[in-house]
Length: 369
Image (cartoon, rainbow, N blue to C red):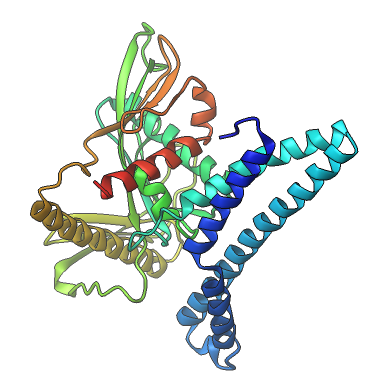
C-alpha cells in the first residue's frame, strides 16, 4: 500500500521482491531450466508423449517464472534511476510517469507475493471446477450460469485456457450443473478458495410480481490428477453408461450415443462428459475427472484425520462463503475475509482478484493457527 513517500515505498517494494526471490529460489529455478532443457533435447523424447508434454510444460512454466521475476527486478531498478533523473531535472512528466509505474509495480509484486503462499501439495496443479444450482429452482439455475460466466471471465482475464466437460441445463433457464477444466499452473491453489456456497439476493426476472428472491449455488474445486498419482480403480467398481448428448432448445443434438456417464459404485460419485464427439475421448475425460474427485476425497479424508488429531476446526470452510446482493442495495461480501465491494457488475464480470487474494491469505492464516 502506497504511503506517498516515493523513496520509502520503493524501498519496501525492494524488500518484498527480495523476499519473493528467496522463497521462489531464483538460482534453483535457473538450475531446473538447465536440467529440463537437457531432458527436452533427448532425441526420442516424443516416444512417450505424456512424459514429453509434462517436461516441455514444466520447462515453459519455469522459464516464464524466471522471466517474470527478472522483469520485475529490472522494472524496479529502472524506476529508481528514472525517478532520480526526474527529480534532478525537476521534470514533472517523468515524476508523474514514475509514480504511475510505482503503483503498477505494487500491484504486480503484490500478485506474485500471493503466489508464494500457494505451497500446498496440490496448489501447483491445474483445476477442475464444478458449479451446481442449489435451493431456488429456475432462479438458482440462472445464478449457477451467472457464476459460470464470472469464473470463465476471470480465467479469460488471466489468459487461463478453460474447457467445459459437461453441462446439465435447467428446465427454463440457466444450468443445473457444469464441470470445466482450468488448464493453468497454480489454478487449483488459486481457485480452491472459491469453494463453498454462493448466495444471491435480487429481484427475480422469473417472478411476474418482481419480488426479491434468494438463491444458492455450490462451487467445488479439485486438483487435476497427474501421472504420479496412484488412483487405481477396479473395473468392477464402475458402471458406465452411454447416451446421446444434448443441449438446450435450438442447439445441435448429437446423432450418436457419444456422451459417457461413469458411476463409481463404492462412493456413489457420478461424472459425465459430452464435450467430444468420440465416445472413447469422452470416456477418457470422464475417467480423468473421476480420478480427480477420488484423489480429492482421499485428500479430504487425510486432512480430516489430521484435524481430528489436532482438535482443529478453525480451518473449516463452513457452508456459505460469499453473498452477492443486487437488491435493495448492491454489495458483494466475503463472509470469511470481510472483503466487500459495491461494484457488483465488475465482480460478476470476473473481477474477483481482491476476493481471491484475500481468501488465499485467510487460508494461509487458518493453516498457521
